[in-house]
Amino acid sequence: MKTTPGLPSPFGATHNDGAVNFAVYAEGAAALELCLFDAQGRETNRIAMSDGGNIWHVAVLSDLSDSLYCYAVRRGETVQYASDPYARELTAIATPARLTALRAQNFEWNGDRRPQIGENAAVIYEAHVKGFTRLNENLPAEIRGKYAGIAHPATIGYLKSLGITTLELLPVFAKSIDPFLEAKGLTNYWGYNTLGYFAPESEYAITDPVAEFKVMVRELHRAGIEVILDVVYNHTGEGNAAAAAQSFRALAEKAYYRTSETGEYVDYTHCGNTLNSEHEIVRRLILDSMRYWANEMHIDGFRFDLAPTLFRKGASVTFDHELHRAIVQDPVLSQLKLIVEPWDLGPHGYQRGHFPPPYVEWNDRFRDTAREFWKGLRPADDLATLMLAHSHRAINFVTCHDGFTLRDLVSYQHKRNEANKEDNKDGSNHNHSFNCGHEGETEDAAVNALRLTQSKNLMATLLLAQEMPMLLAGDEAGNSQQGNNNAYCQDNEISWLSWTNDAADLGDFVRKCIALRPALTGVVHPQIIRPPSGNYHAFGLLLGKYIVLMNSSAGNVLFALPDTRMREFLRSDREIRSDELRGVYLLPARCVAVLKQVNGG
Image (tube, rainbow, N blue to C red; front, side, top):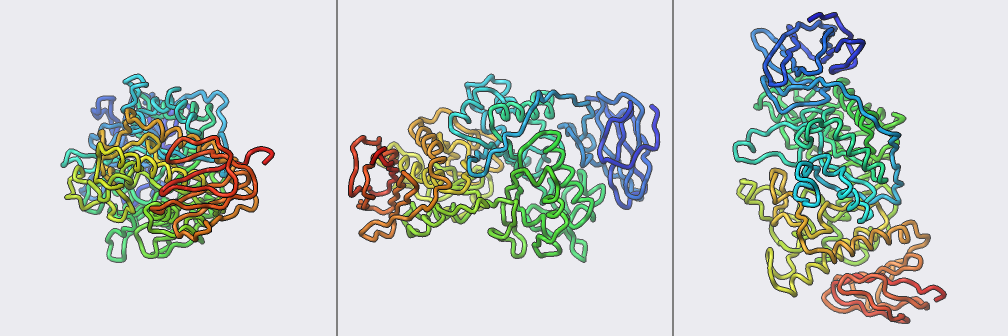
């Protein structure tokens, strides 16, 4: 096997004129070796690499398309094995480190183009690749829970029928295995433990994760649906300082991770380590990763987990930061949808309202206000004001992957996380949930009727507000996690969407609300309508030809109508009626109604 000194960049393994060039950043190493393996994980060769000033490299003049590899890093008498941080495909084989596949990638995009959905028109659907389709019997068994399951016409048709424009996927980057969960028979199902920032998770593929991910994106784009990735650039899956080195720690621990003056790991994420975005090599990793997924994988945007961590200098969050400037000055990245979770767990970590354009923030204030309003604890003006806000710098939501599903929100006062084997101590205790009179599942018709109405009320609140909405996958189908509000480790029926729930009525209501959005968003001179009685928990919104009325109180509320003929367009508690309405309208307790002006009225 012939080798040459190679080239110092780009990082990772790149094919060049019949050779494969390997380059990796490593600090303080006495020697580095490229370790080659066959497809079964048996080592076949070791090749010494050249040091180019912390960038180690070698070029191999051989066909390596069936080979796997990792790096051996020698410091003194110690040898550590490291996965390639720039791996395009990480396999499940971990002998002695997670191995990288070297297959060449040729893919036909067939003229693929980004849908470029405007923020005013976007409706986001947050889903887990595996959980979204794992139990869907309308799909062939072999593609359920896979990228191919989302690419299937039945899945895409379902998203289109709802009116979804943008699919936001929980982390799809190759993830590490958590020993503490594995010991309990659990796994990090959500995937917020990234090991490879360029590699699609192979668990969600049948044979070829890169090609199958691209097919998924291409087919969604053909249907006019965007793809946004939830990305974890704030910490890695290597764990805390006591955990075994897998990649970054073996190569350049002090460069990749934030450490204190005494050498201890700084932890702004409560995940054991924090990536050091003040170091050039980390910024390059993040930017190279983003550009790869944008340019090579054709995705449409990113949702940044615990985003303030990315823009810290020392302990302070600042947007006078090299990473921020590089993102907003990049001609491709700056044009994508860039969504942030605007808080982390470090000092002054709650940064909602402070992220500058082009970032769009998750709006937890809307979530909490909507929940408390329909629980009868928040005044009408608080919610009405948020529903009319239209800065286009916020993502409204009432549920997300982290917390109760919509069905559980109206079915449980208290979390039920015993399956996580943490004595029910994990997960939030502040959910603003309401069980509608019975804890958990019940056959009581009155309780279930109220739960359906309250679910519709929350969906209407989300979908009829001005800012961009995000739905949690399965909420429209009444999906439950059995009261688990932290199902990160539940790779089973707790987390997988059930497609057998009898929730067609709720799904139809959600479709109608989404279809109504274009008529309500961007209306000139919207107005808040208050009932003559001054009821503290009821309000209306006058939006062009429509009036949206909401009443979270326990009694009926009378509203005065404009001097025009109107009809019911939508009700959360029953079917609409065709009678013409004039003068006044009686809205029952815990109900949403949408009225529409009659043409010529």
